[in-house]
Image (cartoon, rainbow, N blue to C red):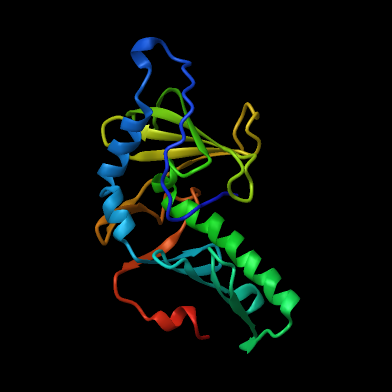
Length: 236
């Protein structure tokens, strides 16, 4: 699954009006209201360090530099990679891997893990990334009875699975994404899943959704800091 391109937030929007005129929405305003409700893009950009668990992996991310540490206990691996340059090193069973081909493969794998695992955490902040096309789909009722505006995300040559499609459901009252639907192919009529996006918690100066409803999946044990040990990204 999905994609995340850091540092740029250029709006690329394709409007698709499938509702009557009265239901057509200013997509930019919907996204702005959602991000404001989560603390604002400035505060997100000023957030320097995030760590979280996803599945059995643990990830550490310096947002300002692109340095990432991925701990993969299933293979007893620790991978230190800069997701912008793909430079780094990898350890297995506590030993530095010196085989260049294996190291390159692990660095690439760590980048893919980060793309997927971080998207489950910070997707609401990535709706206006380059290559992301937004369109307005419809309004829909949420499980709590609230009404949501549904936006569709498709992708143009971005991430590792650009053929994916998502629908995100933005609560009209709270202005927060409350659920999302994942389509494996952009022309699929039915999603592979629709899951809750809930349990928002204040982390630093922003809201993040994690430790979600049972069965909804997603990141756990999130930590946001401004001060952290830089050696996490250089040493085992």
